[in-house]
Length: 370
Image 1 (cartoon, rainbow, N blue to C red):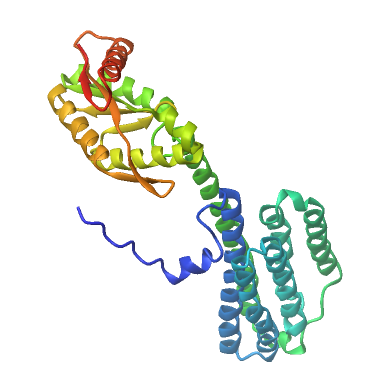
Image 2 (cartoon, helix red, strand yellow):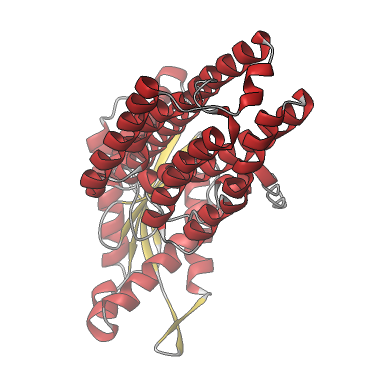
């Protein structure tokens, strides 16, 4: 089946992922997403409120919205800082920008009459989720600053533009309700990002626990789990099941003569060839230093031998550059089909014995377990 091009991410998703790298940890990715989302929400809120304020025709609200426009203009600096990997600066910038934006909204005309200062309570909650654990003193300072700002404004108030008195009561109520609803929605969005990052991190850890770090194949632990599962399924459903143990010939010589880096290169080369031959439901694993295993569900012994012979032949005919010179790798293979009343341990032992036979008879061959 021909590979299809991956769909281009939407503009919104590219904005949220600004600066994120594939090798970033789940925590780093989550914090960058939160910071980028915070900047985007700041811009959207300012734009939406400005449109509403102009529609109202109230001079106080229009002035308040205009005062907040510089904050919207500065918000893209967050994405620029993330893209330049200035992650700590980006986190601080978006938090301080949001705090200043509230001050601009009050100073521009709203004062505290619309309870815009309720955002400071939201910011106090969000600070610990956005800043890193290493910034705990800054975290404490920002939490205290937000709580203090809210307490002072709630206690003493902030004078509003005189035209705020001309605003209908319904507008006052609508603005206060919109502030509260946006606080809740932002908190929910940040919580969802956190939960998604935790789930992603758990999935990554599970993958790493069952993956060989060098080749990207399943490791011995995952292979043995698959072996047990598939053997039980084969017996229950009366299906055929075969296993092949593959060992690189003279691998110690490669390591001794050319170094472990070249040895690793050879193993990756072998894994790539094996991977190109297996079916989606086969299980391919690296179970030892230079030893690989292939579990073949719904496969009779004759078919398993055919698959491994094809692999052995193509590998031996493919050159691998070692120290600038083309070299070939060969492998010995032992193949066994699961017996009707055989234990998994006995089955693997027969495959290993077949492998030893292939080694003893001169290597670069496939042998079948008796």
